[in-house]
Image (cartoon, rainbow, N blue to C red; front, side, top):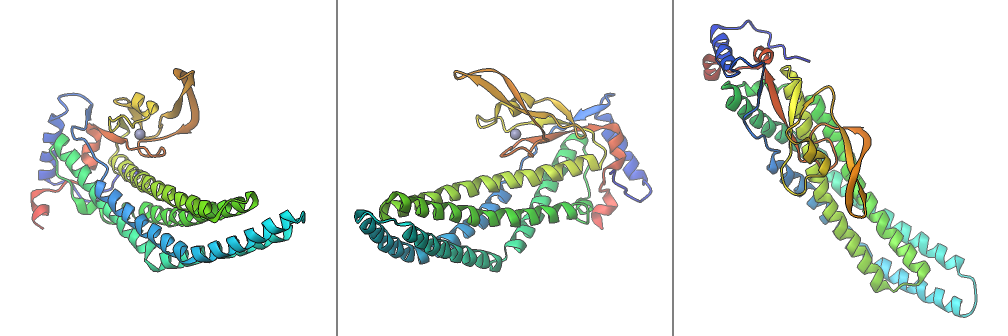
Amino acid sequence: MINDLSQPMGADVAEAIAKAEKRFYGHEKLICKYDMQIPAACDREYARILKDLMRIIKEELERELPTIRTEYKRLLAQKRKEEAAGKRNDGIIDELYMAVSQVFQRILNQVLSRTQGSGLRRRLESLAHLTRKLTIKEWKKAIHATLGLDIREDFYLGDFFQKQLDIWRDQNVDLIKTIPHDSLGKMRDIVYDGFTKGRTTKDIIKDIQSVYGNSKARATLIARDQIAKLNGQITQAQQTGIGLTEYVWSTSKDERVRDCHRAFEGQTFRWDDPPEIWHPKMRKGVMVGIVYEGRKCHPGEDYQCRCVARPVFNKGCLKNIPIATADKKAA
Ligand SMILES: [Zn+2]
């Protein structure tokens, strides 16, 4: 979709476009001169949302741990006694499973109801808007640095991204709810498994705490991943919205960039034809080839990708840019 600015071009706009055209020096394309950044403030806000969730999980878990400990100890003692007497202990294992699954279900329900109550949906909604706002700022800088044009930010504040932002918010509400579900499920399995093997209460609690630690670490990854994805989607809408067809793949150029994306660095790709993702084929620690994964991605779409699409401007796009002219700036 190309922007419809629905207004006749004024003389000042025509003049600004003519000036911008000179910056192409007769070429058809002009690569963006500004290094666009994924907004770090949004990563931090997303991380805060998840930190609050993890705190709720911790509180609810701690409230129930004494019950888990007591039941576990009691039934384990009974199980050992019956084993010593050479009796079958299926009944006790069932009893433990029942008691433990009830406790974890109770924790999960509490966590979900408190998370809902903490306004998760609303917080993700404002985060989506913040991401849009800061991504527009980067877009504005990119256009200013490359074409010398100032865009009307308000153009992008209306319905332009609303649908995308709504989808992102809903997907993230669902995604965040999977965190307590997954981590509490893992903890419950530790208790089941430990009981069958006759492990001590102390060991079980230790493992539960380590699951909690891993979930916390995973939460940070989710935050970065989701903000980069939303940033990528908005970027794509901005660029294709003014009629750009190509971009240059730009990585964060640090050692964490995966081989495939590093190979894409500096290459030009089309918005209607993303490159296919691959991973190295290793033999005895040496890369011997590549394996295509059968999926195609734009920057930011791949899991944990921090790459961005550097716009490739074309002369035709100039008339589609929502330019802020002197009189509109004053208004
Ligand atoms: Zn990447």
